[in-house]
Amino acid sequence: MTTPILDLQAIEAEVRPLLLAGRGREVEMRVRPWLTNGTGPVALWALLAQALRVQGRVQEARPIQEMLVDALPGHLSTRFDLSETLLLLGEFKRGWREYSHRYSLAHTTRIERKVQRPRWDGRAIPGQTLLIHDEQGYGDTFQFIRMVAWAKARSQATVVLEINHETASLARRMAGFDAITLRG
Image (cartoon, rainbow, N blue to C red; front, side, top):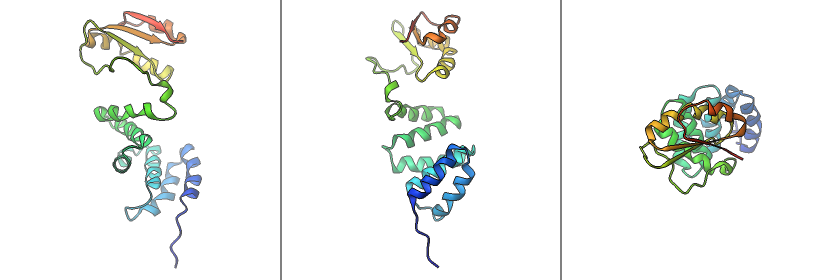
């Protein structure tokens, strides 16, 4: 009996649409046989981690993702995937640190702000200005706008809220900012 030959490109072509369709169990069943001895191509381990996450099995995906980050420390999308898993598991300190790698991904480099000052780290900065802005659209706006008053109290800074035109009327009803500027 001959051992089947691994055609990585064919497997990836087969399972990527399944992942997009949310069919993680099928992807898992397709890639696990190639990984049973604990070794295998990194790409298959990445597919397995994605398949587990699609199924909501983030705790099982985590050690695989950590192994991938250890093996490929400069692979930013792998770090980003791990960051999302850590955040889902409530490991915020490390999760947010890993999440910062998103600015180096091809699809997010256009949203990174090139600022003259360092990013706020949560400490008090009395007498300084804290710019709070959305990053990726309305979801960001609705998430961060409720935290503006908290950020003002914690930072003790002048808070400038930069917001898109469409959500400005909502933002003006919120507390905690000293000024609003419209983006664009």
